[in-house]
Image 1: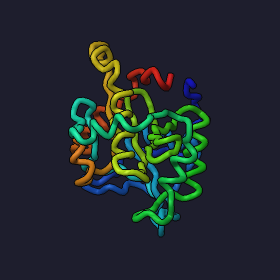
Image 2 (image 1 turned 90 degrees about the horizontal axis):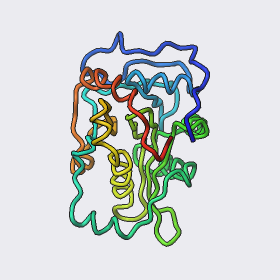
Image 3 (image 1 turned 90 degrees about the vertical axis):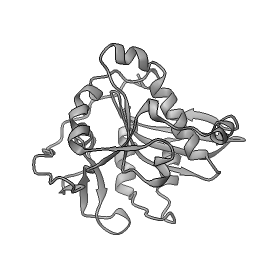
Image 4 (image 1 turned 30 degrees about the vertical axis):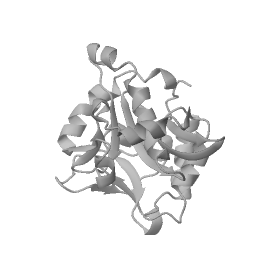
Length: 231
């Protein structure tokens, strides 16, 4: 569905007071769709500061930022073979993907009921999406995030079967890169934001850029058309 613009936020979120090298840039505000979208458009995202992501609500803009360039994705031979064994679907089980990512038994769990509701609202408005991997009719992995123009801001991923989340990421990049030559020829840009680079994500091609570099690129990303699957 074509995304529906929500009511504007009553909060003003920006990076004016951000300290270089500090990831946490603000505390408070709310999780209404207008607030969350404003945050992404300005280089921030929400995550609670308390136990298991509980309150108070923090606003983050990592410096440096983990990003995945679409032509920088690394796919091993074993992952290519694994890719053929999964069925990939888009937006058919968004709530289930978020619930699996929010499983409190996971190490570093941070997705609260409030976060779950906020992204469910954004999904209904056409901004939040899931890419899912299925095996024998069973959901076994996936990821979810926010798509604004050429930016896909990844929030979380999960797997119940080896390589299932990696396959979802590969599929996401394929969706975003399908018309990349034309996008670039028209002056557009596409990128997957993964927030923080980890050793695991680095094996897939994730790199780091400074916050200033990321936010300088945002205007071009935001003004790039969505990929066909989400228009």
